[in-house]
Length: 68
Image (tube, rainbow, N blue to C red; front, top):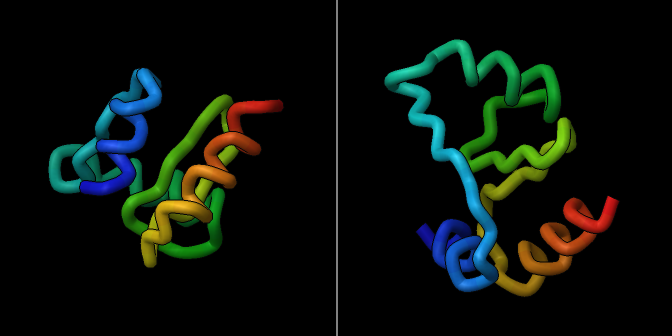
């Protein structure tokens, strides 16, 4: 997955949650983003929609997410 490669390149640690193993996590995503979106990223309680991946947009949103 491209998003994970970027996180690894930047040295950002992450926890991968498999919705097949933890179906309750889908409800958290729906509550935060208003829909079930995969992948979804959460940082300090803020969520980012990783669907329709665009590397430049992802990096820009990731930097904004982490700057707060």
